[in-house]
Length: 225
Image 1 (tube, rainbow, N blue to C red):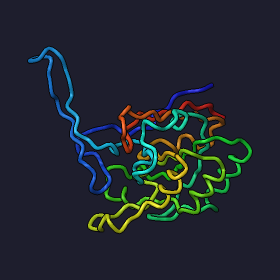
Image 2: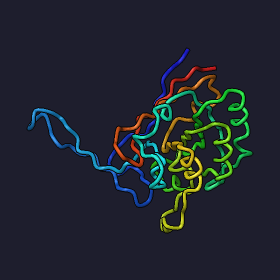
Image 3: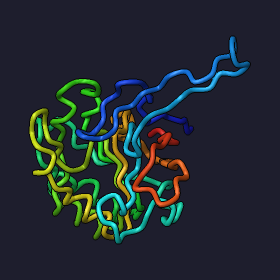
Image 4: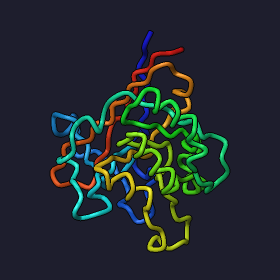
C-alpha cells in the first residue's frame, strides 16, 4: 500500500534562509472584509524554503531552471541514511556506500540524503549541518544520479553566524550542476522514508523563466515494506 508524505517546510515570515539571501515576509495584501477576497503578499528569494537549484545558480553558462527536463524533478528515488553525524561532518563516498550499492542494482536519477538535520530547523544549529564532499558528489554522478535532495540548508558547508560568506565555495553543487543536475534543499521528513520499499519523489518548481532556482512543494509517494 502506498501513501503520500509532505517533504516541505512551511513558508512563513522570518523563516531560516541561507546567509545573505532575502528574508521571507508573508503578509495580507487584500482581505475579504475590505476588498472582497483574501490575497497574500509574498517577499522571498528564489532559494527560500524547500527549493531546487538549477545549474545556473553556480555558473552563468549553465542551464537555467526552465531549460531543464522535467524528469529532473520527479521519479523513483534512493534514500541514503547518514543520520547521526556530528555538526559540520563531511559525507564521504564510504558513508554513501549502501545507497550506491542500491543504485547499481536499481539505477534511478534521484538521491534523497537523510541527515536528520531538519530537526534543527529554526535554530542556530541548522547552519552547522553535515555536507557532501566533492568526491561523494562525483560518486553519485558516476552512479547516474542527476538530482540530490537533502534535509539541510545546503549540500555544501554553510558559514556560521559571523563567518564571511565569501570564504565558502560550492564544490559539491558544481560537481552535480556541471552535469546538468539539480540540487534540492531544506526538505524534511526524509527519516520517514528510510527503509521504504519504493519511494517516488516530486520536486516541481515554480515556472520562473531564466531562474537560478525556485521554491517547490516537495512530496513523496511511498510503498512501505
